[in-house]
Image (cartoon, rainbow, N blue to C red):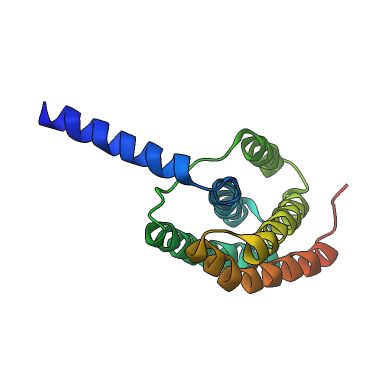
Length: 169
């Protein structure tokens, strides 16, 4: 009986916290969780299937930097008393991951991976810029401000890599 009551209170408390979140914060939290997982997961594919040394070096850095950002994100959520979202991709990112995964057995993986990273980091930079400027939750706003320069650097790196990794015919 006590376990059931504890479970109910935990679910109720989490629901109450989620219900009290400003819509901009909920959107930011969901986007950050999905984006970070996508960038780590696709970089794992690059380490396994990438051919170019530059792609493998970039992928390692993405995994390292996004793992650190993920830990910082979770700490910022805890500071704001927000339960972390599930560690899974949304439908759109699952489809992008599956599409990239198809290139593992065909020519063009490196180019497809770099293109996916450019697009993912363009979205991330826009999301973080907006939240850093307008976010209503202080600890997450601070997280966005701290993380934005790294994401902008990743975007620059991915764009540079894009010119060095041409599409294969």
